[in-house]
Amino acid sequence: MSNFIIQGGAHLKGDIKVAGFKNAATPIIAASILTKEKVKLHNVPVIEDVKKMIQIIVSMGAKVVWTDKNSLEIDASDLDPAKLDMELVKTMRSSILLMGSLVARFGKLATREPGGCQIGARSLDAHLMAFDQLGVDIRQEGKFYHLEKVRPAVPEIVMTEFSVTGTENVIMAAALNHGTVVVKIAAADPSVQDLCWFLVSLGVGIEGIGTHTLKIKGSSKLHGSEYYIMPDPIETGTFISLAGATRSRLTITDCAPELMALEIEKYREVGLKLAIDYTSHSHNKNYRLANIMVDGQVDLKAIKKLHDMPYPGFAADLLQPFAVLMTQAEGTSLIHDWMYDGRLKYVAELKKMGANIVISDPHRVIILGPSPLYGKELISFDLRAGATLIIAALAAEGASTISNIYQVDRGYEALDQRLSKLGAKIERVED
Image (cartoon, rainbow, N blue to C red; front, side, top):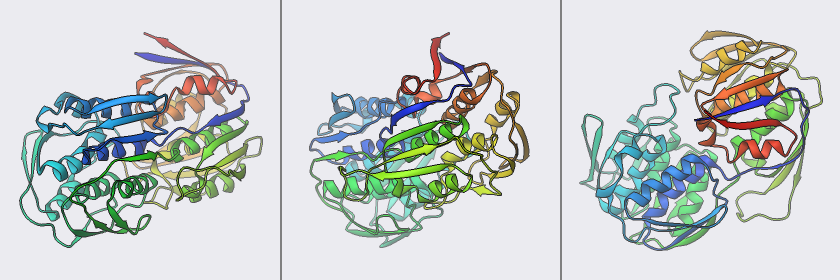
């Protein structure tokens, strides 16, 4: 198991490029098996979740070749869902996304309950209820699910909540042989938009992309595609928080700030200086690429209240990096994560370091700042907590050791190497 040893206290400087979006890459890879023709994907982040999703589709017979460092080619023409590796499925939450694509292509599927980050209860009800409206019969036997398409889809599906992966599953399930289906209460997050744009490139008709009502016209046969995955808005926000917490000046390159308008506004609200320079190149006409210059050498002020909301609200995955930023701000901040009830484990680690934080309930924390942070022995409980603790360790006085770094590797490509180029003193060691 890998650990990070971090010597804090240094101001960072330089450019750091945003990688491809983890939360878009896994559903797009899942969607690539809808077609028997070859799919080429670019800007694919080389992270553990992507590697595992690739392993899962390879277990069914897909041929996957990395053609470049961040580009791959997928040939799923000879796929057998009966060979699905259940041991891999149970270790990865995103494996649930294969339900939609496999049911659409093969009409039936047997799979087991997915695994993933332990960040609280995450019901599958939104997925299963939507599948039922699509005409899919679902039978559960212990930890296994049996899905079979048995009747026509209803013309209008109403999601029971703004579930991102639930919406993505429904979109993929409706992409083949369903005629036209309207999906209401659809999540509109950037990852959902990127999946929709990818499916359009395969030949699916989708109207309302970026809204909460989607009209999907399925196709009897999808063709191949060459597609660029969008830059990661969560990684972008993580690096903005890093600049602020370490009082650094950084340039974050190849971002898509138009997809994170509220997050950008909240960072400015607490005093960070952000200058956005739109570049002339983009592989996707639906958003513009930009470089963000962040000046963290400012007096930070507390935010009265910050809570996550369905897109275009503030992203839940950025609450933790924003919280560590607020430990360095003047005043009292309230951070409210209403979506998950198990994401506050990182707070105990920050308190070890000297942060003045009060847990009000399983969803809310009050942060009093600024508080000097000191290096400690820390545990990365989940993906975003790990990134948050790295920011805290770099802002702290002294050395920190962060264990269970696999969680960070799940979503951030070679983060230690990229941060070292900014002047961070971070070393990966093996137990």
